[in-house]
Image 1 (tube, rainbow, N blue to C red):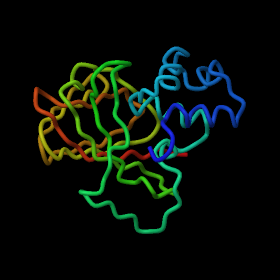
Image 2: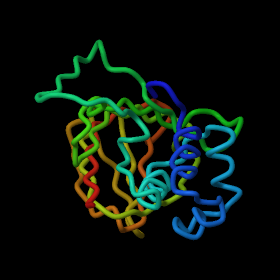
Image 3: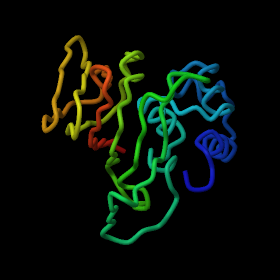
Length: 189
């Protein structure tokens, strides 16, 4: 995050729209306790709930990552990319996923590209999420397990998967070794 954490940004947009926590809960379908944890404890949920919050607030997902105006093209050097967010399974639990935005700084984007480190902790969660849009993933290193609906796919370095995000899904590393992926999310407006 550039200046504010995700909880503060959600609070800011809720205040601008004069939204209560209960109204945000109704719009997202997420429980008020879960939303309160995100907002008050600054815990990043998985992308599914974060996307539902962004849509309920009528902002793009990237707004949680940056507010910069940019010019084309945006170049992100491997040595310059910064960890933007970590997905936790809950308050005071270990990090499961580390996201590095590859689009941060391009304010007019329609896709959300990420480099993601999948830590062994990610294999324990298995919380399927769904949201509008599509996702494209290429495995860079390690082994990755993708739960998609009732199917499970194990991918190796160099493999890819492209799916509709409305189908409940979950992505994790497979086994005790961390994995890494490049992921692109397309979210229709």
